[in-house]
Length: 265
Figure 1 (cartoon, one colour):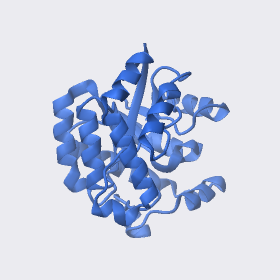
Figure 2: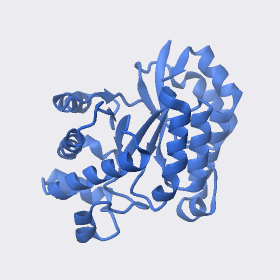
Figure 3: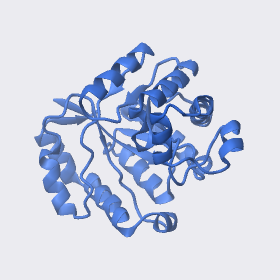
Figure 4: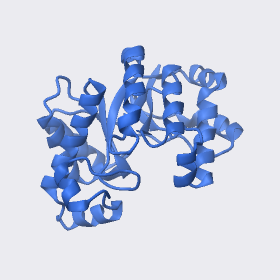
């Protein structure tokens, strides 16, 4: 039997997304939920997630998705707020600064610490895993800052780290770097297909998990439309979210997992 971690990393983005993720996790259709604690909704949405974590226990991994870039997130640390206000840098700007070794190391380190602390205090538990939004963990300079922040948090059990890249030399280097901080990587696998046709998604999922290594992390973006989501995302992406939610909710999806001998870990 192959163990797969099927998870969503954008809890806290919109009420419709959050409701869908909690429903799927409670019913055993998702095995990992990553919270964006830098969103406007997190102070209101952490409590139902906390209640869910108490209800399902270790059947689901609960973690934090660190955000250093992108829209709909704001700095958590005081120093990052002083320098950048209520806006994060773009992914492209962070990538450029990382390439030229001009990252604001102290600011990013403190921001990572603040987001980890915000999660742990409100959830009253340590994160089971860490991910970084927009794949920025692939930059070794930023990964080092994140790993250092995790280490400084002095967690009783070191959280797993979701790899931002699927294979190759970079993956091995990142795994070695994580190991030097006593951290273990969850290998990244191909995410769920982003299509809006439920029948086609069912068909694709029949062979989607073939060839994946044990414990691979498969990202999903299920959700249900609400006013906030309609304002912030194109209709095409919302349709993809709703399609994934419909398929993952179905008994047919569970039968596919059984047939392929896949266990959601």
